[in-house]
Amino acid sequence: MASPVRVGLIGFGTIGTGVLRLLRAHRADVARRAGRPIDIVAIADLDHRTDRGIKPAPARFTKDALSVIEDPAIPLIIELIGGYEPARRFVLAAIRAGKDVVTANKALLAVHGDEIVAAAEARGVRLGFEASVGGGIPILRTLKEGLAGDRTAAVYGIVNGTCNHILTTMTREGRTFGDVLADAQRLGLAEADPSTDVDGVDSAHKLALLTTLAFNVVPRFADIPTEGIRRIEPADIGFARELGYTIKLLAIAKDGRDAIEARVHPTMIPNGHLLADVGGNFNAIFVRGVALGPTMYYGQGAGSMPTATAVVADLIAAVRDRAIGTGVRVPPWGVPHRALRPLRVRPLADLESEYYLRFMALDQPGVLARIAGILGRADISIASVIQKDRRAGTTVPLVLRTHRARERNLARALREIGRLRVVRGRPVSIRIEDRLG
Image (cartoon, rainbow, N blue to C red; front, side, top):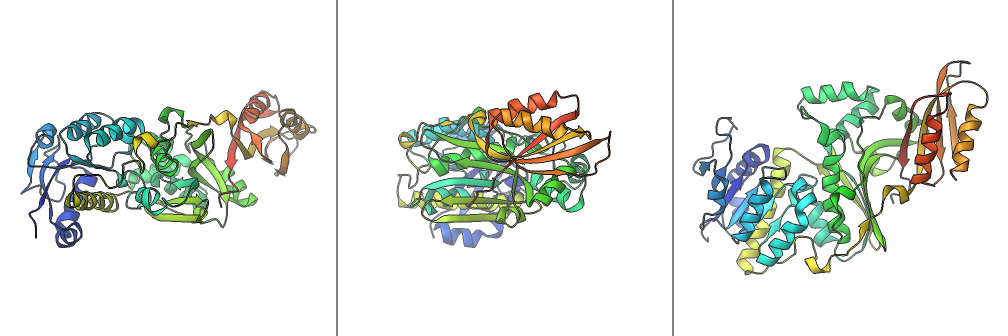
């Protein structure tokens, strides 16, 4: 068999240790699939004190990432430090040095992906990032290759395991967001600072990549409307169940002629739909194709070994391509950079949806009529009403489901309703997706 491919690893955290463990445990299988062995010969990380449960040796262990990147005997670099900088600087340095790069860094690619992909294409090197979305679920390769013969119309993703665990537990046990989050942090299922997860930022990073591979459009990350799950209350979950829905944090992308939709927010989806049954910290991506119709991809969306499997798959693909020749078989975005479509992200105010609305209102005559009047003047019609626990003079929940309405009209109406003396607190609105496919 040919001599091993020498690989440099930048970042020796949870995923990095998983990659090393997987390559060592499955060395023979990896060599058989790649056509030659793959060895990590150098590892860079600033932390040399933490016991990861696996020894770097015989790999060289250093704090100097650039020394690994600039080593002429290492043709392939794995970047697993995360974040924007210095990850961007390291990845671009590796590309300039003619190295193939494998990364799991969704934040980096969501914000700087266009620059990095253009550099990789210009230099003629491979860029693999399957592990950046869905952990071990092979969704990016599926969009780039498996579904290349179809036109993708829409993508719906549950792509953050922390949020899905929290919402699943709230739904099953009737507990509050804060209570479940605290438990998730104690169990190690949520970070000490969970903002990136629970505020939807992590899902939006992943949605940016799904949108590019599904529709050949690179969205500006700042243009993706993003809303997290902090404001979801047990009452809303209960009313959703009564209306026949489950609440999930959904990453949504839809194709269009003059613009694409890309947005992340809590969404009510019909009970009985495959996505409604995705529980715990699992991920799922539901794809609707014009010719193929609906398909769904489900599995562990995070963790050391699931994510490591995607990194190693990209390593194997890069080694196989190198054996064929110097050319890159599949462009990083699925199409050459010049073939990308120059479409914008449709502003949230222009979108239409059905909505769940909840108001805490004084139980007195005429309140529903006043609220309905404001909605009517905003061109929003009511599909159904739920009003329970009526006790004259007290504050009770008033729940409405609307027909399709424009987002800007709803926002204007909710501001006006929120100023009514009979309404207490902030009105709650959650978008409904009935037409997933």
